[in-house]
Image (cartoon, rainbow, N blue to C red; front, side, top):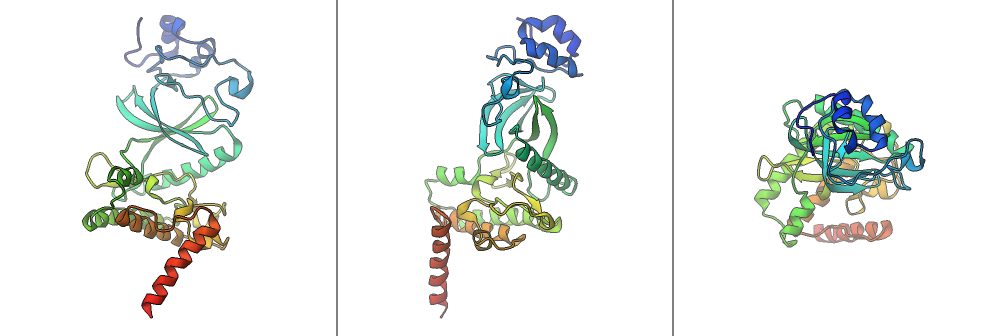
Length: 300
């Protein structure tokens, strides 16, 4: 079997590799001026033009059926799923154009998730433009595109997240020296967000990843819930263990909620366990009040 080994045109790909493509792909590929990868060895979904569930490529919830070693946009090879959420999924891919590994966020094919992803794109673009020297420890978007009615955003590929690191350390907590390094790096991110009037809205260990080029270097990811301070949209934000009191109580919130989350994260990095492990919002508030009462009693 022959393979695409360098850039080719859709016409050449059709002429030489038609047998490797589904009927749907034989029509779809014509819209691509560059073809880098076809996913010849994958068990492709047989798309049906005009068929239900996005021509057979989506499940009932609008999430894309990923197929290992198939292509995305005739360029990226799907290697593994590295993240899932209400927004959709994140897959690790090999970019056959640049020969580098990337992470691609595939947004669910639903109107409300697409709308929020457009806000995320605006924020990611602003962060990229204002962090040209890569000095503020935020994830950098590489590009975005549409594929089979899904908005896709490509990112640099990072390493373990801090929760995975805590788990790998048997929930023992880290040294003060390492915690200081993490704290400084996260504060640099928050410095940029504060300057741009952006609220992250979901700061937690899972959204802070090790940067592979340096030990102890991190980057903050997942701006899918983020907003500008003057354009707050949602009231149900932040993961529960890191949710600030004003958000729990439904009060107006601002950039300070990210600092609350940071405080919760630092305590967890030190002890190995969440500071406020509530099982629901009521219990979450009770955990906060209990710690606050201990502090007030001690301070007297």
